[in-house]
Length: 273
Image (cartoon, rainbow, N blue to C red; front, side, top):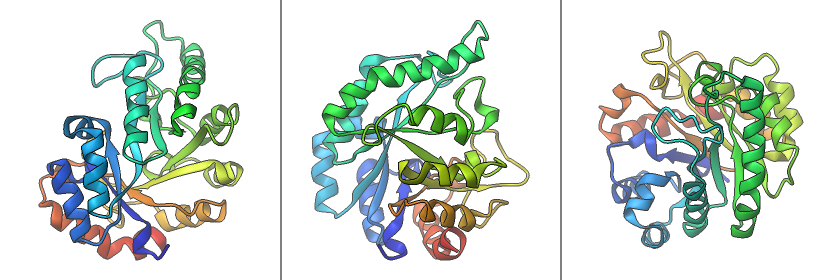
């Protein structure tokens, strides 16, 4: 892939666009990859979405999300086996083979070790269904500040300890700069992952953080040396699309075309380096 051919835009980055607006907007900006979310695709219809994507030459780099294996989900609900299987089916239906997992927060009894074990058990239960659909499950460590309510898996090492219990064709690692940039063992764990990294997302860490969840910035606007992480991920064997995933009220309030202009203008310098 050329530089710009690796660029993918996660749907949440242009949150106010509909599914059709997102796909046509990416085409207009010469961006060939979309990071899709289950909700908008379900609303549009997976089969209809697959046709619309193909008609506009846009492929799906990943789908977000399934998981919450501890039963804790700050967005509402808990462990939903049927929803996880529907997410697998949706991922396959739109021609993608990477489904992100969010582990879930700490059990109400505060058993952190038990919560983490339930994640591995939940993935093991979902793997056969995903394997039959041709979908790989992506274990994503989230930032430690999200441990209590959203993800008890917070480091690259913890993620890889889970990933390595499964076949590479079944379960892989997702690296998101916002979540892992602080980790003193980051580069060693990226090297350890090797070809088991199946998705790579980028955004920047803003100072000050405007919000503990919605504080992500456009690459180049914050404190992360994203190019050094990109080089490490590439050197370890990942050569796929690079998703820009941004949760930020200020970005969402900006016209999406302006956001895409800013991302594409800085992609080579602030992501690839």
